[in-house]
Image (cartoon, rainbow, N blue to C red; front, side, top):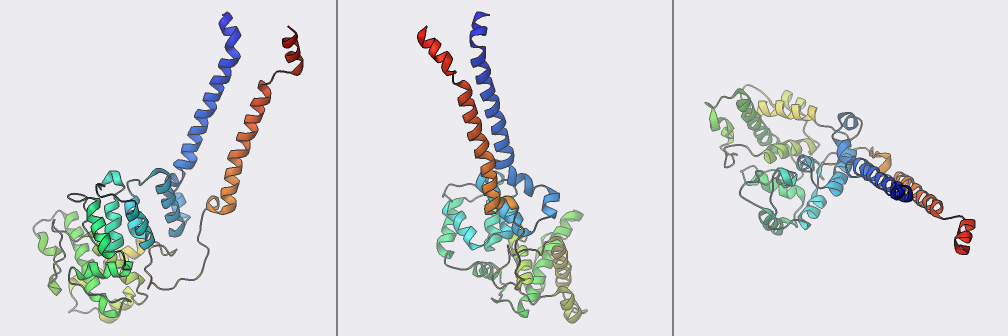
Length: 324
């Protein structure tokens, strides 16, 4: 008891400091480290913000806590060549891909229109070799080269000649997914071939790579010349290949699911958008950042000062202690 009476104040102070540190760590982790990740996974937050704001928050989440599982898909849709340059500068030959990498392989494939998207059988060296050969090209050239590898020649900027082969690609991709949903393997891989033009778009697994289908949609979307309704009214007739008709439906379906607000993910030849101030969260503006730092630093400094003066003995006690 004597020991407790003698040291209880010190023990209380130690416990108090530990509790404060613990609560501070929780606040730091919840609102700073995990803050961006929690916002981009909140459906309500997402519905109130543009693609620009969403992509800014996603990149901030990557910087604070590394790549999460779905970040590779977001990067593939919204990232550009500068992001690719930064990503390749941090890549090592032995880097592995997959879930634990945030599916960087999907980001790389969607950004460049090159595969494989599957993480099996290759590592960072595969992409470092590709980067060494292609780093001087633009993103549009990467995408055009990806189409050329499977026999589809596109123009940069796009022309109306690009529409039909890209719609056929979208249509065969849609047919593939319909067959998977129906669990109908009888049609098999024949349904996944680009039959009307004689081009074979299957990968090693007999599937159309996702990056080809997505970039076909993006190339049409950003051309500034393609309108699915107008195309259907002026070009579709009884002789139109079924894959083109499916491609039109697939394009419209993707268009409905996608946001059109913002500039991220738009290729350089994309249709000009009106100037606007991206819906950047307040706390990412300079005044917001300064306010947050002030709210953190001022209470900490003031709290430390108050603890310091509370631990000081009054001068009268110091004098009595010296005299004793």
